[in-house]
Image (tube, rainbow, N blue to C red; front, side, top):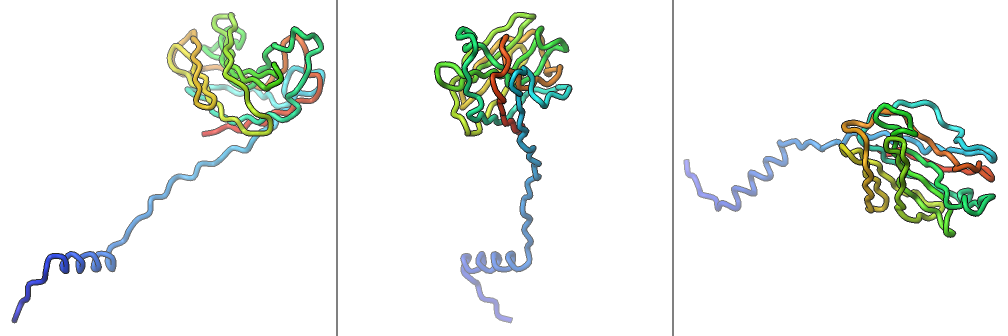
Length: 198
């Protein structure tokens, strides 16, 4: 029997063709993440509280969501000096205490002719806030609140603001929902859409 020597390139090509014919490939399948639907929270005229504020326990290291404000977020306070008051958006109580003892949440207000979003905390019964910036009406705005040992990190459009925390470890408390005020109630119905993210 006569054997002939094939060039190396031809042998590699033959092996590739044989592998294509006999080899199977597996496609990586990413797990399907179920998206939560957006929830529209309505604060009725003359009220402080959102219509959706069921008691919900929180045990987490982060809270990520998108918020959309519409034109109902534009308001004028009855008393001009209340226009700078911070309305509450979304967050949680912490350190297994009341939210007026220890908590972290985003705040919002119609101030200086724009919708401002703020970081808002209670630390051992003392409240504090920091301005994150202005956001557009009618567009989803991604927000993140992280718990990092002795601090909270608020994130909006990549900008981060850190504020001190009274305890360490996972945040333990209850969910905090949209709330209007300050000492004034909502001057008209206000609707805020919130979509939690994974």
